Amino acid sequence: MDRNSNKYTFIYASVMVILVAAVLSIAAMSLKPFQKKNTEIEKKQNILASVNIATTAKNAEEVYAQKIVNTYVVNSKGEQVEGNAFEIDLRVQKNKPVDQRLLPVFECQTEEGLKYIFPLRGAGLWGPIWGYIALNEDLNTIYGANFDHQGETPGLGAEISTPAFQDPFRGKTIFDAAGNLVSIIVAKANESAPAEHRVDAISGGTITSKGLEQMLLDDLKSYQNFITRKKS
Image 1 (tube, helix red, strand yellow):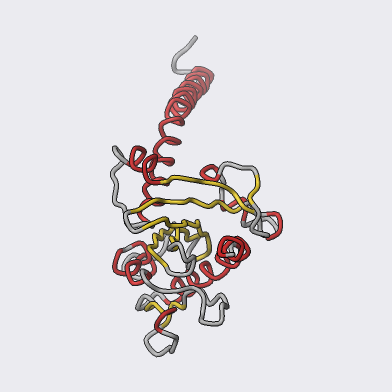
Image 2 (tube, rainbow, N blue to C red; image 1 turned 180 degrees about the vertical axis):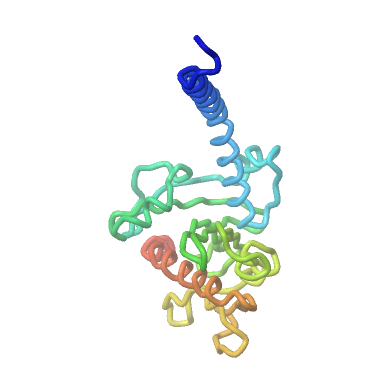
């Protein structure tokens, strides 16, 4: 075949495209188990971070196995149902009606007692935000919090993933004296809110801050029946 012909050029280019596509496909399939493992390790690190336990990629699985003493799934009525708490995808659950959602619960044993960890998912300014909130055994006082985001603005909304924003959640309460669920008010400087329920919003990141506030309220409402059952 004439190597200078259009036919040869077309066949050669087609073969090369097929070969490159095959190599990339094989590489993607080969890397998939490693990517899944890394995602699982990162999730375990984030769960532990909500109870103020810092880990590395190397020791996260070991620490998680030691500290997370129980996991289970509840429904909107607060009843325990079948399911694997770790494998539940909140993106899928949030698209379901509330009464059909599966809600993961993680219990962590710390030196300061048992803590209950609830995953969260909501919307920021530019995309989804998510995290974990850990409550003391009274199921009212926040022991720790960990938040992250997909594409919030660096220096503004992205600050939700920093200790400077997360640390003030510790010691705040989600119920008022009458037992009503107030959650946490992420308040701007000129916005009044009870100190026990208030954390400061991010300067210049109001939409992300309010999105996080709404996420907390919505998702804690989902767990309210479980909390009530557990307390009684």
